Image (tube, rainbow, N blue to C red; front, top):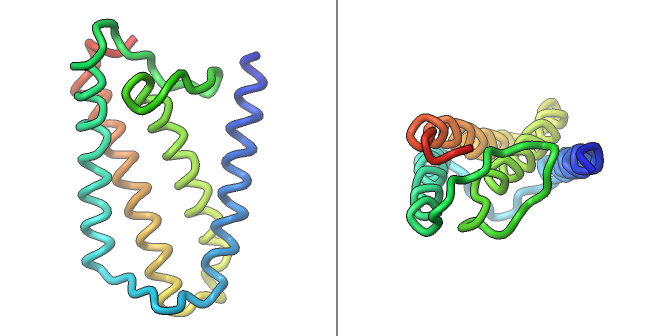
Length: 140
């Protein structure tokens, strides 16, 4: 069963990378991604993991399970926040890596979309590290 979940997560990553490669090559239309949106997205997604995990810790009496690629998702954000956070990071990482493939053909607005996705990924990654540092006693 552990190998099954590893294959599922690999498929999620590959599908996200394919989606990311397709998003940037298209015309962004009226989308205006600027440095302010990039900065705000980074700060919001940096604060999101500690806030959601602190709520889950207060709501549950037993410790949270550490995120792993060898198990599935057990519940929602309140029941299994670390696993869902790991899956969110996996999806964003796939989008960013897929988008990077199309950089040579990207125009300025598409490049800003890539920066925006990368800032969200970096915010979640750093937020996850903050969670493991702050809540290490509440995590198995």
